[in-house]
Image (cartoon, rainbow, N blue to C red):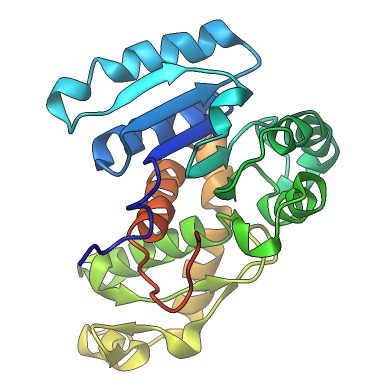
Length: 264
């Protein structure tokens, strides 16, 4: 029995926007083996061609996949379209500062997607992602259950990483979540946090940590401000979100929640 919901449709993903996030996401997906086709679309078609060619040179070390620069017509038979197009967050800017610029960009992209009679999943990654996901629902004409945002997936990974470092354990054994909006208002859900099923405070004490309130406040602040630190040091964040994009696509392709079908 097949274990995914893309068995009867083409395993094709389209990435709109070939900036740092789009290119890094394409590179991550190339290595994942999830798709047979990866199409890159950008306002600068030559940039899309260059990224596709560069990433394609890694295919001999991965599973077979066709990567190329395309157009909006390639969306027609895609399983997933990933929207990364948008202005980058600059040092000193919050994600909310990008609203007007990126809504304007989305207003030029989403009508083009709407023209293609697209029947797959639309995944919004550009910031501020929660607001832009709402915009995408309104402008794309797609039903709400087919428009997703990357939300706090990356923030959750950052929390798991920070807790793993704090406790000197594999972050994959840490089960904790950031909830709410991806941004300065995000919330760490400490009440449900655990390490391999052991309640977080108890595990901390097993490791010799007893200043729980102080540690939780510091770690939550570090997670919330991590993007600002990265942007200050290297001008942009893209590798972490690229891995988050890969993980979201993996959940869709493998239909990891059998009670919630993403595709017909």
